Length: 311
Image (cartoon, rainbow, N blue to C red; front, side, top):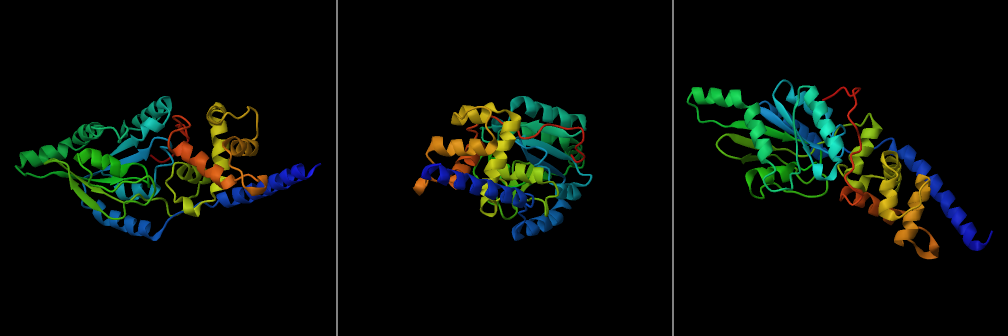
């Protein structure tokens, strides 16, 4: 074995050991900063004042977007699921999710909130959902609008939807979690007022498969994540969904193990450090970024399952 082969062997062993450690660490993904605690308190206070809720889900991971903390606040008030970012999710699976929720008796629509006028469908559905209340206002001769709170985990597109709704850039948007920090009341017209709320996660992830999905789609601050381990987990996930996803994007051979795919991407993309060592961190960022920007195709991470217990 020559010097180069020995160095390659040492590097591979190091990466395998590192990813084993990261896999163990990955079982404890959690991100619940102080502003989310404040957000839940604010939601508690304001939930008593609203007439209904618009609950925004990320179409790439609809089930993982369901925060159980929100249902404690919604209680028996009407709510509408908006499966957003459908331009980045598998169309067939998105329709299955829509049918799944409808079978449970839940109001749901699908859309891409970045498209102009896409919120029109939300507006129409909200008027249907709140028709009885609006009719009561009318019969009493009261000129009053219904008030709805918009809920969602970080980076699900809530603020983009609101901006689409009101026809101007009123809510702060961004491609990272935690952009919206306070409450924002916005008037749509004389019938509807909206309350935007900060994207909020669970205080604790009991299901780490959900935690990983939420991390994959960018709803957890990357700075607290093991980015290399997350990239390896994403490769594994994409291989389970369709091995062609990675092969088509990065021109890697078929039949490779996830770590071998990771290394092949490093080599093909030139992510090499001095001493001919692979730059796993740079490759990780590229792989995750490609997924989040839709460069790997329209991919949904989870299918509807009759075993799901929360809606």
